[in-house]
Length: 130
Image (cartoon, rainbow, N blue to C red; front, side):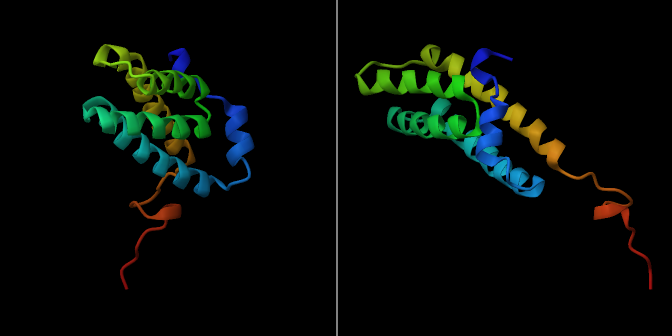
């Protein structure tokens, strides 16, 4: 995993440690969807939508504990603010880190998702004919 995709578990615990596992899972699912949507805009959007996505991704990654990535995105954001032209090559490192983070979020979601037993019903119960 790249340095930009490293996860700060302490920050996560500070921000969300008091939430139950289902609440953490729901939060991660929403964050994962947001991250993927914003990543798509950063990769393929217009310059204006790329800038907006980069700015939003700073908050998403930082709040979830991916501080290195948030700082890298902030540097990109500041370059845009300064009027620099950012190309795909400039964004590649951040995009790669965001893809790794998306995978890490999916792993974390799966660890918080109870396994279904039986015939796919929660708790392993099976539907019984009447």
